[in-house]
Length: 217
Image (cartoon, rainbow, N blue to C red; front, top):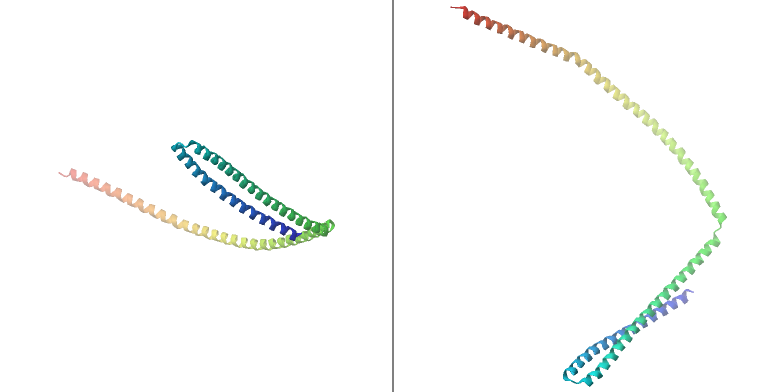
């Protein structure tokens, strides 16, 4: 079957090359007629200028035939393109048909070799083993979490104990420092009071000296 399909593909390829050559030849002929058309138009213009109307009419008929031939070549080239496209589509259709045939054969063999009962048995065994694995993972996870919780609990207690010790030490230090601060504050207040009294007594003496000097003649 593959050999038959390969021969068809080679035949399509060869026919497309033939069509491509025909299209190129058609295009070259059309371009030649186009150049000839330009020459005919120039000759007609010259004949009209010279007053040779009969000769100009004859060339005008040739110009019409030339254009008709160009139109036919356009149509032929277009038709050849359509034929080439149809051959490509046919080849692709054949390729698709062959592919589907191969796939259908593979699926048919697979369906023949596989049984629903075997598949269901396999799925049940999979579910069983998956449940066993999930149970093992859960047990191992609980054991790990339990061990980690014990370590965390011990570490938390150690940290809490250290923090409490530090807080008690700081509190005791602050309490010991309070009497010293109060004592210094009292001493400073007493010194300030003595200075104020001394300044007041000195001021009174200055006033008395001034009054005494006023009484002296």
